[in-house]
Length: 573
Image (cartoon, rainbow, N blue to C red; front, side, top):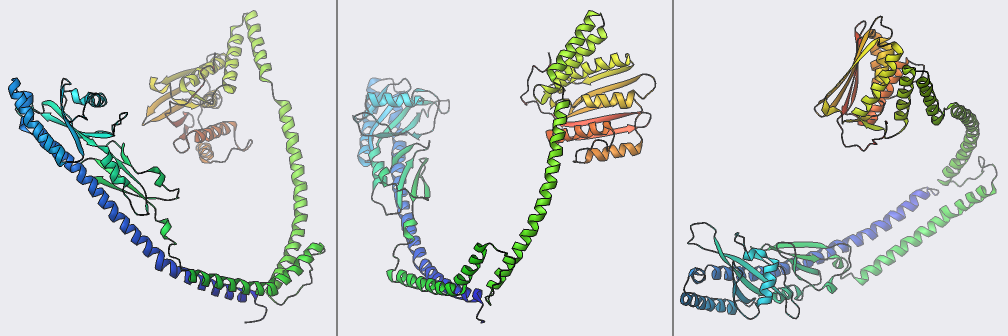
C-alpha cells in the first residue's frame, strides 16, 4: 500500500470496524430477538384461542338452552290452549324447564315469553316490566308478526342495575297451515358481567386490549382502557365466536421483546469496538486528511488566483487541488459567458417590454366599442336603416358573448351566436348564401368550448362560398353517436386542391401552435380550434377536414357529450 493512499487506508479501517460491529449486532438480534418475539407471539395466540373458546362455549350454551326452551311443546300448548286450566298447567311445566335452564347455565338470569300483543310471562325477578319495555322499544320485531332470525341484543344498561344482554328467539306454530307463523318470542336475559370477566382476566404482556363485538359491530365487552399503551404499531387478531355472529379482537404488541435480555457484556464489547474504530479513524483522518484540507482552506480564504494554488501532497488530495484549480478556471470562463448572455437577455427583455407596451396601447377599450356599436344602432334607427340596426345589434351581442361568461357553453347558446353572425353575413352578401342548421334536440344541451363553431362558419363563407360565382349553401349539423357529439360544417364552395388539403391536415395533427405568416388565415383558425379541442377533451376528440376542388369542403369536430359543466346563463341578452 503506497503511503499517500488515504482512501485505501480509511476504507480498510472503516470496513473492518463496521464488519465486526455488524457481525456482533446481527448475531445477537438473530439469536435472541427473533426467538423471544416468536415465543411471546405463540404464547399470546394460544391464550387468545383459549379466551375465544371460552366465549364460544358461553354463547353456544346460551343458544342451545334457549333453543330447547323455544321448541318445548308446552310453550306451544300454552299459547294455543283456550282453557285457563290447560294454559296454567302448560306454563307450570315450562317454568320447571326454565328453572332448570337458569340453574344449569350461570350466564342466564331470567327467561320470558312475549306474545304478539305485547303481553309477557317471565321467570325471574330481573326481567320486569321496565326491562321488557326497554326491549320492546329497542326491538319492535318482538310484537310484530313477521318472522325473524334469532339474535343477541346490545348491552342493556339501566340506572341502578347490573348490565344485561339478551338472546331472542321466535316461536312458531308448527301446526299452522301457513309456514313460519309466529306466535310469540322467547327472551333469555343474560349477565353481561360474565362476558366482561372474560376480557378482564389477567393476560400476558403483549395484550394491549381485548374487545368483544356483537353481530352489529357494537361492543359487548371491552378491556380496561387504562391497559392500552401508546405505541406505534399493533398487531390485531380477530376470531369469530361460534354461531353467535360475534367477533373478538385482540390488540397485541411485540415491540417490547426486540431488545429484552440484551447482554450487558455484549453491549460493552460493541462500545469498545466502536470506540477503537473511531479513534483509529480519527488519527488517520487527522494526519492524512485534516491537515492537508486546512492548507487548502487557507488558500481559498486568501482569495487569490485559485487556478494556480501551488499545493502538492503526494496523495489523492492532489486530485482535489487539481479539481479546484480546474473548477475555478471554468467558473471564471463561465462568468464571462454568463455576463455576455445576460447582456443579450436584457436586450431581448427590453424589446419584449416595448412590444407589450405597443400591444397595450393598441388595445380597444370594450366599453368604447359597446358605446360605438350602440351609437351606430341609434343612428340606424334614426335614419330608418334596419340593416345598420341589425348589424350593430348582432355585432354587440357577439362581442359580449366572446369576452364574458364561462369558456364552456351549451350548443344551443353557440347556435344563437351563429344565427346572429349569419344575420350580418346575409346583410353583407345580400342573401346570396343559404344556411341550414340541423341539430337533433338531444345535442342542444351538450357543453362545448365557446366560439368553436363561429370560426368554422366564417372560414366556410370567406374561403369557400365567397370565391364561388353565384349562390351557395352552408349546412351545420349536430348528432350524438356512442356518447360523442359530432359537429359538421360543410359548404358547396370552391374546395381545395389535394396538396393544400394535405398541408392543412398535417398542420392540424401537429401540437405546435401555428406561426402567423407561415400559412393562410384559414389554416391558423382551424389549427387554433384543434388545439382548443385537445385542451377540452385530450385524446377523446378529433378534427377532420374533407375537401374536393370545385365541390366543397366539410369540417367535422368530434367531442365528448358532456352535459354537467357549470355555465353562466346570462351571456346573451
